[in-house]
Length: 267
Length: 125
Image 1 (cartoon, each protein chain N blue to C red):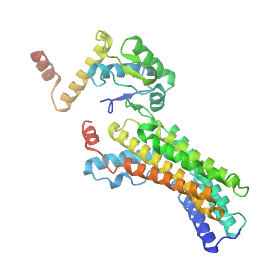
Image 2 (image 1 turned 90 degrees about the horizontal axis):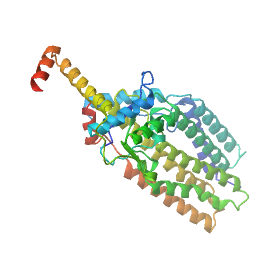
Image 3 (image 1 turned 60 degrees about the vertical axis):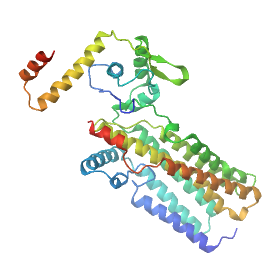
Image 4 (image 1 turned 90 degrees about the vertical axis):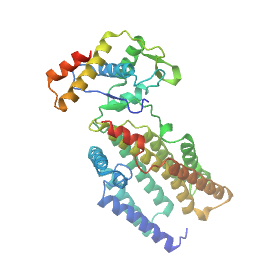
């Protein structure tokens, strides 16, 4: 199969970039790092200090082994070399990259689930469908399964199955992250509840967005195999991605609500 | 609203974790923070959040149901009963102690002495 050299080197750069990033900053993997989400929030100094203090403690609690990120980084670099040497087709390297991502997300999820100390619980009822609406999970699941239309094609069968399984696993982890136990140690309970809810939301939506995006990229990489079914599946994958994207915009929040601030002041 | 009501478990306390959960939920109902008909989290959710065994939460819920504070509503979950019992002396005492302790701590923090607080309490009551 002939691939345009520009496209091949483009993907070599992508794989190399991911690989180097994960090797140099292994804690900055997909979801376990807590970046400066909270520093951007428009709050007065006292509330901001409380928020940052809680976020920093949370970051310290969640810090785990960077081994998984480094392993995924090595996998990406190996993929980059293999694609550069034309040893493997780009879709195969892409499917391996997805497997690496899924491993990272899975490791991060289990780390989140097992992190402590957990001593305080809100009596608010929480379900994955209260965090994100059902249609988001449905759209991500449909989008994830679309590469299966290429299973009848022997040259794409394995890659299509790996991409589908990886995307479904990402959707599954998004659902599990939405329902992961809260991490409230009791140092500053109302702020901890806010940070926990906020992280749960952005992590679940981020993963949910990744699932149909993975399928969409797969269709772009296998465009030379396009037939009617393939093209329809690609269009549906775009639609699923947009549905989840709209969901992301609908549920995204930029700062603390007045009601939450009121609860903060009650302490 | 149940949104800001929390339950805390101290693993080092002499009271068993299930008892701690039970008393705090009971107190929240008595204070009126948890209203009649309010839905409680599932056993699994509360156990996960508190890092205790599901049986611990299940036992607290079961005891609260036996005492008439909660009702199990099948698939709709566990709810605070519509007819909250009022004659549980132990819990009433616990709620009173909690409130009075908080009040006294707050007054002491503002510089009032023990005798001043007692004198004012006697005068008012």
